[in-house]
Image 1 (cartoon, rainbow, N blue to C red):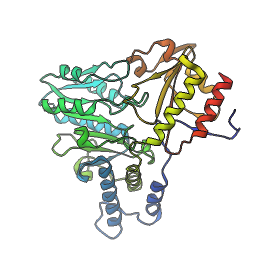
Image 2 (cartoon, rainbow, N blue to C red; image 1 turned 90 degrees about the vertical axis):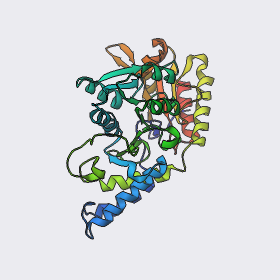
Image 3 (cartoon, helix red, strand yellow; image 1 turned 30 degrees about the vertical axis):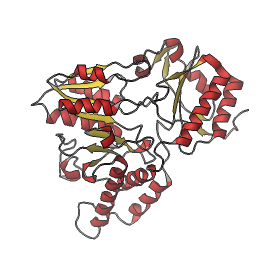
Length: 376
């Protein structure tokens, strides 16, 4: 069984998603008709302003917060940077200590490292073999100088869902701001800010079927945070710069549409069935990365034991997926996430992440299994 020459199968939705039709339609009027500045109080500006506020309400509807607590950003990286740097700069009179985990996205780790050059003290907590951080480790790491705890909601590589409600309860008890990077969870599982108990939450538009270049940051009312971009009083003074109306309305429409997809039960069925198919071909020579149950419904990260991930992808022409290892000059290195989880090199060098989407069908996964069976 093989894939037709022109057949393309997209299994890299954790990297980026297609733009949903609802987002495309939401953009159209703002390409040609409603071109005014949303800060202008006249006939050309008011439709743009109303559209931005409608979009803000749609994002808040998915997150379960008040629209005034949503700030539009340029994407997940900016949202993370705003949360981490914003709390640090606003809280230097209280402390300088930040707690994070070893499996965070570079958009979290790198800002923390940058703040170290400005005097911040950063504690990076270890994770277990499933990629989970122990909430008790968070509690033990807190000092009188701790001002922020940041831990991702779910890991982008292996799909493990962290114990965010437990960690946020510890943070709240200690009076410490808590941020979570929810780029991989918004629209896939519930990211209700009250259920999670977070003070700050990052959204990446292109992970939730909106265009690239747009995101949002939830900031709980009363959270002390410095503006990320200084200038005029846009976004209630929290991010200067004329709002990107086109992309804001697209994100709003995408978030509104995502409400009916939360949980993704049908996608989980496909992912589980696909894993069973891999085991049927490779047996014990395919192992799972990440938590067996506390995981994203669409994410399957497996090791092809004794093989190299890039070589596996090479025998899957037309299939878009990603690997958790890199090969340089004949030497294979594991991603920081797999290394932090303690995945043995002999297993992890064969890591491949298949991340399914709303439009994924079984026939596509069956074709991938067929290619693997023939070629590997």
